Image 1 (spheres, rainbow, N blue to C red):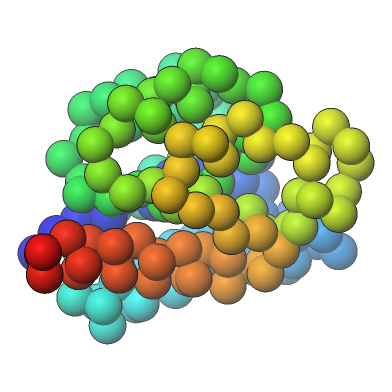
Image 2 (tube, rainbow, N blue to C red):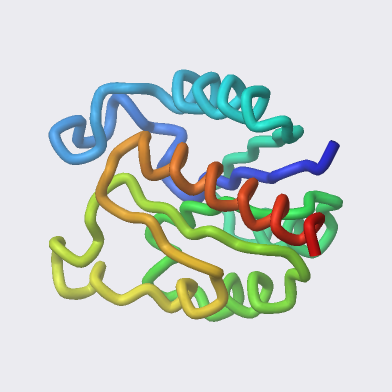
Length: 147
């Protein structure tokens, strides 16, 4: 069974508490439970990871045995060239996700330096952004097997 790694960046451990009008009232634990359930339906193994530290995210990208990544880089999206480089070096599909529509927010949040290293970006659908991202990653893996 192929594994997908879902990575949650800085401040996502505060889901349900931090600006619920923007990010919703669901917690990270609730989001991860939904992802585990969907992964089982899709027939993929799932690993989830959250860190507020850029280096920990980069280290995991460089060492994971996951076949695909789904990542919400949080604020690192807008300025972390180091994270972008790690994603660009990763061999499998990468799906970037965001709970809010980054293109409808403050000007500094509208640029994603990490998106250029991703296969695609899903933004603005709350928890569904992650679920759609997981589906996209699983679909990419399925297509690779079919080739």
